[in-house]
Amino acid sequence: QSVLTQPPSVSGAPGQRVTISCTGSRSNIGANSDVHWYQHLPGTAPKLLIYGDSNRSSGVPDRFSGSKSGTSASLAITGLQTEDEADYYCQSYDTNLSASIFGGGTKLTVL
Amino acid sequence: EVQLVESGGGLVQPGGSRRLSCAASGITFSIYAMAWARQAPGKGLEWVSGISTGGDNTYYADTVRGRFTISRDNSKNTLYLQMNSLRVEDTAIYYCAKVWWGTAAAGSLDYWGQGTLVTVSS
Image (cartoon, rainbow over all chains, first blue to last red; front, side, top):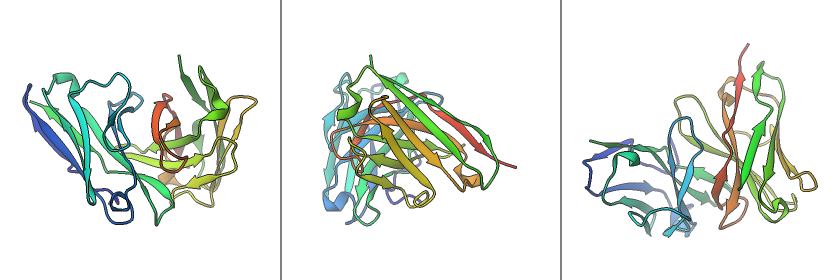
């Protein structure tokens, strides 16, 4: 079980908006550690989407946005497209572990 | 164009050792912290280790601390991961990645290699 908890799956129709949550604790997100988000398609290298809680990485469309509050963070995707179907991971630093951790991942299905 | 190319994967017996390499090009390697992450079959991503620009500071996940050693040779633009006392549960695709926005332990990873598969099995 990951220290950062994500829903195993989310789904939405093309054009809709979905959010993926990442729930941590006072030793990671709640300690104001930065949260980063990645998109991962099987057989490819993961792609950085959001860094430092809410900054979009170069070339990432503004349909993707990140936010953080308390011990949780969220990734929102608006105007869903079929190519958004992938696995999504959050990452943050844990002060107790003195290391980064990834969430368990969320599989996004575009219906 | 930034390229990170891992090598050194393969089949190794439990208890054995393996050294992974990651050759970087298209970046000024010495000014960036670097990291390793992995993905076991059917599992999610796992952060493994990070190293500062000069190699002075290293960080490890609890699952590999004491068995794995991260290092770098800035004169060769190469990152390494020495893996000892390998276990079946270390079987995974190992990715090297460049750190962006933050420290070697906490930073985001903006460029990733394609990965190299390490299989630990008898």
